[in-house]
Length: 153
Image (cartoon, rainbow, N blue to C red):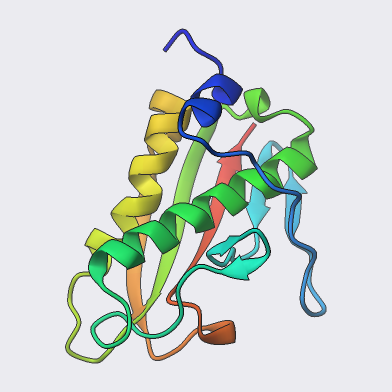
């Protein structure tokens, strides 16, 4: 990829927002050695949850993919705040995707693709990562998706 991360984000119509402040007694991101660990990021856009509820009941797979993408945008916001420059990212090592879903919902992996596809599109090979996608009974603030990341810099 010859374009910059910023150019790719602009082409997608996405401006990385200010990193969200923690909602309780935790740090939004922690650096240990050359790794950045983000706390779970919710699907917030312009300060509001883009979808709410459970996959398989209130939220479609496509809406879940969009929610996962916005979790990934917010992961980049935390990385920007911690590293001062997204170009410092050497690799997204792993993301853990938590999907609030009904007991019979089995497409968590398809929801997680919203984040994985976005990170690969914006960061290229650097954005390809290991991943877990798991179903949850519920998530904070009735979010359908929450994602945490491990980032090498």
